[in-house]
Image (cartoon, rainbow, N blue to C red; front, top):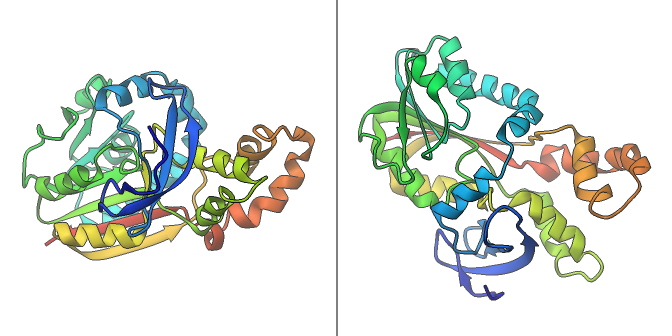
Length: 302
């Protein structure tokens, strides 16, 4: 794939600026091209990736090890999500969790007393434990097996960044919800720190740092990072309203592990400097001002 500054944004169709390229070891596309839309601010992978290739990529990951690594922070996220949902719907509401993964969020909802739960994921996902617990399960790549006007709530907990076609995902949420139903989502968004790192791609001597950063932000797994402005605009156009939007800093691992991943490991800096660098970068990586990297949004189908 050629590096082109005038590639079209995958969502709004406006011109996007080339940021950098990174190596991908999880599927046939070995070099990924990263772009930022000049209009809507979307940062995305510009390569043409198929559902089949994405399935291969996810098959290359040790899911059990990953879920264990992020278990603590994921648990906090799920607790926050259940508290938010309690304000929006009742325990007997029909809820579907799209991109449910290992089903941990649905398990927590079951424990919290929710009684009419469903989940959706790609074919091949093992969710037999949820089926045994009474959850309705749907499996396909394009959401067509999910009935229309059926659910009171749709949850997307760190899902929207993974999908190849975000427009189809959001339109599906509207289609499968009853009028007055809620979509509730968590997704990474572009923060001030991202924009700073994008500038390093144009500065000699700092390009490697910018590439390392972007490799952690968009990849074969994280196909795009949104802006909250775009999310509200697009969801409004689809037919959602009554928004609540919160931007916050969210780290999946202890800060020292980010320092090791982004700096000491990739830049060949001695691990002896990890404590010092953790202290230095804490104001940038672990604060809302520089790194409000997560959006929590709920909206009603009008």
